[in-house]
Length: 297
Ligand code: G1P
Image 1 (cartoon, rainbow, N blue to C red):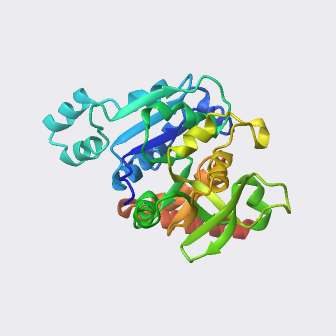
Image 2 (tube, rainbow, N blue to C red; image 1 turned 135 degrees about the vertical axis):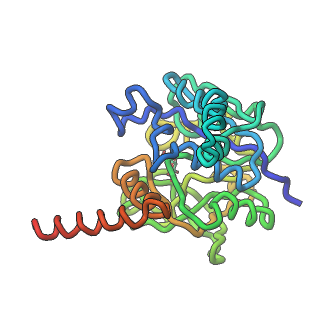
């Protein structure tokens, strides 16, 4: 029997320099896709997967992110008094239970593995999820929920996986495949940011993980890897060396790299079009824009 996954770590300590000057005063995770901050998409996905405890690994300058999870009592009562029930419901859907959120500070930017390690004491001896809010995944069934269901069958450790073009593999953690079973892939090795032409496959790790607490112990060694950082990928790969199972899971859905400007814009278009109230007008605008561009070329 695999244990239920009820805790998730959200590494949100990054400086977001790719989005300067915006990130001079707002955390990257508060930037909005349509009208919801990036972090809200990650939280919604975690909740759908049955997560009950939300652990944020933050850093200096992330105050707005912590405030975002406060209940807006005054605003709620204004909306209630004004009879704006729909807006009230939207607002209340973001409310988190008291005691469900914890913030841990990562004092030094030593890498993703280190950020996860910082949350270790709040995890204890149970499996946990990690969600990287930069990776936004549009899916009928939320990605982490798909993974939790698969994990009930497999146990071990599981990472979300997606095929990427061969020339992009060096931007990711990449899986060395032992056995390809379709959606599920058994993994015999993992390499973080392999050099061009040295990637073991083009199956890349995407920012959703279900991990055993052993991974936290592996991170205790604070070994540095690619880019001189403590890498989560290496600590997971260590589990393979320890003869424990690691799986890749090809999720159903579309992933957007909201850590890059191009990915963020693409996500904005996709999520905008997915809103019934915006769809027609927005689509018409996009079609016209494309025609204007084509005519100008
Ligand atoms: C991180 C992980 C990498 C993974 C990627 C997915 O890299 O280290 O293994 O493939 O997220 O988005 P980063 O994008 O933070 O460089």
